Amino acid sequence: MRVAYGSGVTPFQPGEPAAPLDAADALGTPVPAGRSQGEPDTDHQSSPPPEQRRGAQIARRGQVRHSTADQRLLANQDSGDFVHSDPWRVLRIQSEFVEGFGLLADLPRAVTVFGSARVPRDHQDYAVGRRLGGALADAGFAVITGGGPGAMEAVNRGAQEAGGLSVGLGIELPFEQRLNDWVDLGVSFRYFFVRKTMFVKYGEAFVCLPGGFGTLDELFEALTLVQTGKVTRFPVVLMGVDYWRGLLDWLRSTVAATGRIKETDLDLVSITDDVDEAVRLVVEGTAAPGGARPSLPPSEAGRVAT
Image 1 (cartoon, rainbow, N blue to C red):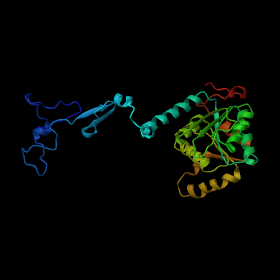
Image 2 (image 1 turned 90 degrees about the horizontal axis):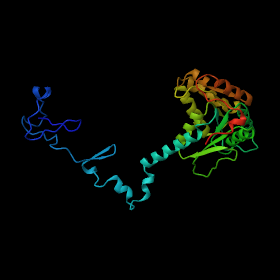
Image 3 (image 1 turned 90 degrees about the vertical axis):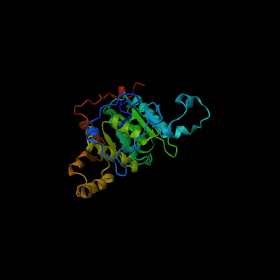
Image 4 (image 1 turned 30 degrees about the horizontal axis):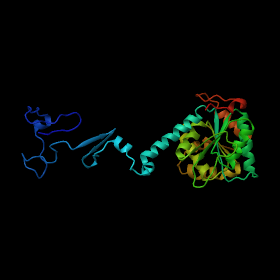
């Protein structure tokens, strides 16, 4: 007779009446090659293996531990290596999401702006970023940047000087980088993917100033999320026609022309040199109904509950 363990089936015990044969047994279970009829089936164990439940986990045989979780928790002889394990990293990742969501939950309508950290303060792109930050604040938006120097600093500065709310989401890097002085509300993350979630979740539009790999990474991540419907479509504006024209030409002449994207996918991006035009595209693109956060005047946009 076949004995099943687990799934709520009770093992057969000597002295108990035999359970009726199921259909398969009545018809005769095929005998595997190499074993004669009536020979014991050694492929099936006669008793269940040693088993230990550790929360939702199940350990058997050599994986069974002879101590409890409480015993190991209260023992002090362990090293600190556990803080570098993946389960511990999961807790750190979770804590970063909680920290970010908690800080930004009451944020008014906001626009995420990307740009190079390598732009000096006397560069034209810095001046454009500063004007952009001020114009977005005047339109009732908070601004969110990576919180670093260069173009990010310029946008934060422009928003802060205009009385708007200036937010910076920093990232741990191999070299030291602090949040710039024009950030009113900031948080620093260990993990890029947590930071990216905050950019997307709390920004209703993306504006990209000229930038490098980081800016390109954020740009194409946003376009992918919009293209695949992971986020509701919102405006993506590129500031700097001369800087971005080559990229758009390549997307049209090579990527779209070979069928890697649709020609209409390029409609997801707008390009301009004019700050007022960029703000207009943002305002019009976020005006559609759909539960957007209410915009606040600059006098109120600078205050967020903490």
